[in-house]
Amino acid sequence: MLITKSLIRLVSVALRMSHTDDASSEAPPSALVPRIDAVTPVASTKWLALQTLSYTDQEGKERKWDVATRTTKRANGGADAVAIVPLLRKAGSGKVETLLVEQYRPPVNRVTVEFPAGLLDEGESPEDAALRELREETGFVGEKCKVVPQVSPIVCMSPGLTDESIHCVLVEVDLDNPYNHGTPKPDLDDGEHVKIRRVDLREGLKRVLDEGEAMPIMGLYLFAQGLDLGTSLSSDEKK
Image 1 (tube, one colour):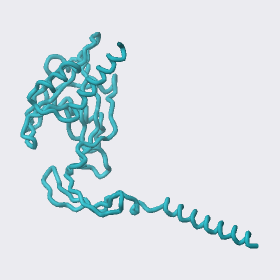
Image 2 (tube, one colour):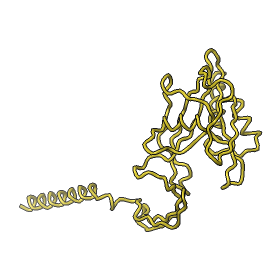
Image 3 (cartoon, helix red, strand yellow):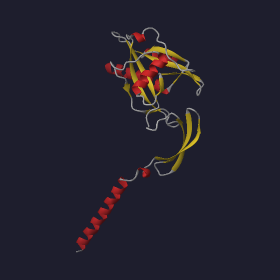
Image 4 (cartoon, helix red, strand yellow):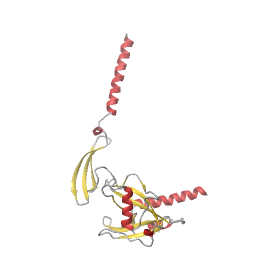
């Protein structure tokens, strides 16, 4: 009898623990941490807004964080912009070139060197945005049908400061296309003053970053470092 009662008590405890585990696994999203609890507007201009985020961290402590955000940001959580990595090739040639953009950036008070980039228009796909921005900034026409642009997942830019996010898009540029002959003319917006650099992907890119006076954007610098490292490792493996 004592054994039976003990078994009943053990089963009851086990059932209660099971219910507790089920309840915790089905906890409402508001109970999960870390989480954003509130967004308080601080100030705004035409293009940028400053917000204070009230959030709960992993330890359940309430904290605050100031963040800069674009006023054009979409409610669906999509990327704000695209950064384009153009690959210029000509049939029968193993040479691969790319395009860089130099322009004065007031926030750093310097001329910077970057890959072509720009904001996504409403309802625009990353592929179409990349082809449009490439043509507008550099004049070159990228391929969409013969070689489909390769789009990265959404990546963040400077997550300690801003919620800006982008897609990196690899675009093939056929130099045999008549639109890409000579020096194509860009279609720049008012106030845009850019210098287009057409360089060899391997040697020219590294030389511009190592010897140029313009400040490289981080993504471009890491791309060049990765390309150089990959080439070095590949050479070592062949030895």
